[in-house]
Length: 296
Image (cartoon, rainbow, N blue to C red; front, side, top):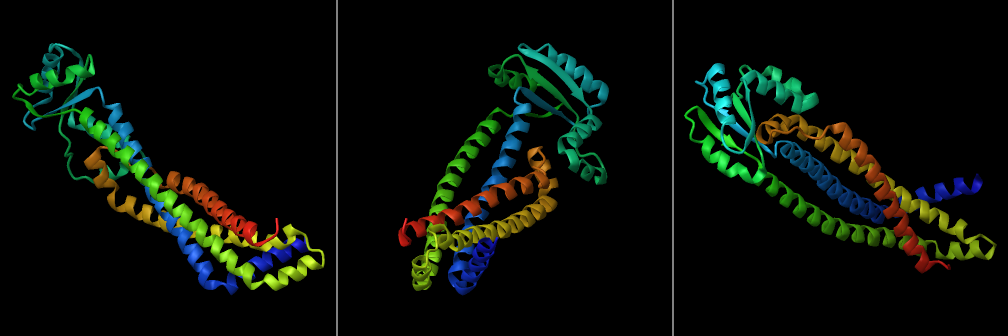
């Protein structure tokens, strides 16, 4: 217990003595974790948007003009069913569309209660027999006078998946670079501490201190630097994501017809990811430095 207490005290003392380098290490790891948090938040939301679009992948939305009555909409749905390669067609009123929108928004559905009037159009949801039939079906749908707009999502999904791939590759490259930089900075921080205590370390080993007793404070120092960095990163990313969802969720839902990943899911996963990465980087940086400057 005394050895553990000594190790922790020395680790905090070393961080205090090397404020500049310790701050540089914390800044470096925090910056890397912020980039990880940014791309993680983007990726999970892009994946959610792709999944919601994929749910509509085989559906063509036929939006009707405001002048079209419910009876005319249902009659139109029956006519559309007669088109070649159409598997099914269902009429959705404006109220039906609002109910579906609230369901998709999940816990944010209450935001739609404050809308003074229902802005969603009535529509006919058309299911094709096969995806390759959609282009021909769309051509036929555009011939109806009651149709205001025809929308299907195959091209959008392909674009989303392409963008998602680019984001993943770019994020991986940037994270690897920042990971290497963070390791170097942490290693240099510990290296300076080792140099500053070189004479003391020689005396400790001379009187019989074990290698792990000597290495302990430096190892804990790296872990503390990583832990402090992860806490800072969680606070910054969590606050930023909370504010972003608070301000832009309604617009995001309207533009992309998809909700955003809940704050609780983001913050819980970021805590795990950040603490694991921060502590591992700090510990590994210390190990790399100690292997070079202390006897194995």
